[in-house]
Image (cartoon, rainbow, N blue to C red; front, side, top):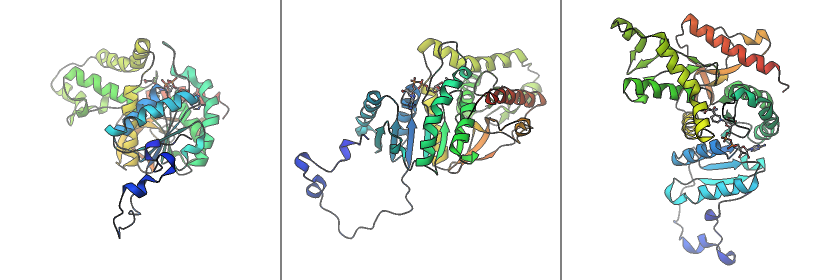
Length: 354
Ligand SMILES: NC(=O)C1=CN([C@@H]2O[C@H](COP(=O)(O)OP(=O)(O)OC[C@H]3O[C@@H](n4cnc5c(N)ncnc54)[C@H](O)[C@@H]3O)[C@@H](O)[C@H]2O)C=CC1
Ligand SMILES: CC(=O)C(=O)O
């Protein structure tokens, strides 16, 4: 395990510097037992893991950050590179190891390890390779941090969230996938760009699979509290279905475009996952479209059809993980598309041996 050298109290020759450097203040109270020590582990220090790690550090989300990867030198290099930014960041102890014991006692374990898409390749194509890795990654994580929340990012994220749930034995509220939080951010960006407003004022969700069968919930979009579709209808502004379809297609094509241009996506997923970590660890009770167990919601009754299905729905996130799913309004067509998305994922799951 590589420890942070700068926090060591031993100077050259084994002299305890804290003894000679500091004069203790007498009669101090011990630290408050109510102040929690927060630990996050990130598994996989590739493009995505590192974008998440650096965003977590800048947002002061953890007292301790543990990094794990299978490639020892790269892992140590990434750890040192982050540690060397200590003078510019809130204080966080950064550890790394190829051994999972470094993750023990984590509050949140974020899994980004695994194969990524080649240009033009579908996320679903990665499944077999990444299920094999998850069989090595999830059991030790669950054993060493039995109270943690697992946040899955590796693709295909929805099926791998199901796999992580199965392998961990955790209750489903503590196994979440980053899901369509990223797709929804892309959607909000495109709508905001179209209307020339701030994306943070746009409430809009993509649900279902994080991928090609995702569903845009046009009927519930609002901007600054104004429901967009009914506003356009009242103003007798015709909003062509093709325009809406085009924007959704652009969302679905976003990752393919970025991957064909730079080889991978990283910055937006980094912010998206740090945003989820914030809502969970700071108990924000904020609504995010993320991958959760979907059985029983919006008529998805997959258990009866042969299994549980995980896909994105707008969920309330807090310290306990996924606390509830919101009853977002959907048209019949949107519900049907969501059920079709669930079927796509279930068919894939049926081919798995977990
Ligand atoms: N859910 C989402 O919205 C997004 C998901 N992704 C997915 O995230 C994953 C990672 O993508 P990148 O970081 O770009 O890939 P990358 O190739 O840069 O990094 C993957 C890392 O996983 C490590 N790894 C492989 N096997 C391991 C094991 N057994 N234990 C620990 N570490 C291991 C590799 O050494 C490497 O450092 C991919 O599956 C990608 O499709 C990427 C972007 C967005
Ligand atoms: C790669 C991927 O899943 C994304 O950027 O959406």
